[in-house]
Image (cartoon, rainbow, N blue to C red; front, side, top):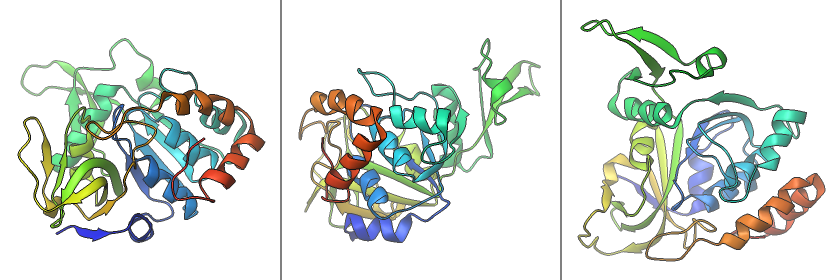
Length: 273
C-alpha cells in the first residue's frame, strides 16, 4: 500500500546518496517539483536516468546532485542546449558527469525489461550508429531460433522512480492520462517509487484512456499542485513556454544559475525563473 505523505518527507525517506534515480515524464507531467526538492535536500552522487532529460535535470546536475546520466536525448525542448549539463561534461563543473547514451527504443525496452523482471531486453536497434562503440551496455546477440543478429540492452531497475500524475485517491491508487511515455514501466521497474499528484480525490472516476497505477505498485504519493510546472498537466494547466525560454539565459552563466538556485529553489517550495 502506498503511503500518503508530503514531498519533503517522501524525498527524505526514499532518495539516498549514490542512488540511481529516474524522474520520468514525456513533454508533460514532468516531476519538476520533486527534482527541486532533491536539490533542496542536498542529495549527492546520483545516477540520473531519463529518456529525455530537460531543464529539471539541468538544474539537478548544476546543483551538484549527479555523478552520472543515463539517457537517450537531452535538451531544453524547443529552445536549445542544457548549459549546466554541457558545463559538467565539458568542464567538470560542479563535478564530473559520466554519460551513458542509448536510443529512445533502447531506453524504453530497458524499462520494460526491468518492469517485467527480466535481465535484459532484445530489440532491432542501434544498427548503423556508433553507440555500441561508446556505450558498454549495448551488445549484439544472436537469436537461437532464426540466427538473426539483434541488440541486447540490460534491464533498468532504478533505486527510485519518480513521476507526476493528475490525481490519486486516498488509498494511493494513481490515475494519469495524456502523453504517458514510460512512467508506468519506470515505476514498476524501480525498487522504490514516488508519485506526486495535482490532487487527492475520494474516488477515481472512470476516464477513457487513463492509466491507473494501483496502490500496491507505488511506495509513496504526495500532493504537489503544479508539481509539473513548467511542463503541463493535461486537464490542469498549460506548458509555460516563457520559463523554458528564460532558462536558456539563466543556465548559461554559473553565477546567474547559482543565484537562481538561491532565490527560487533554496528560498521557496517551487522554483520558477
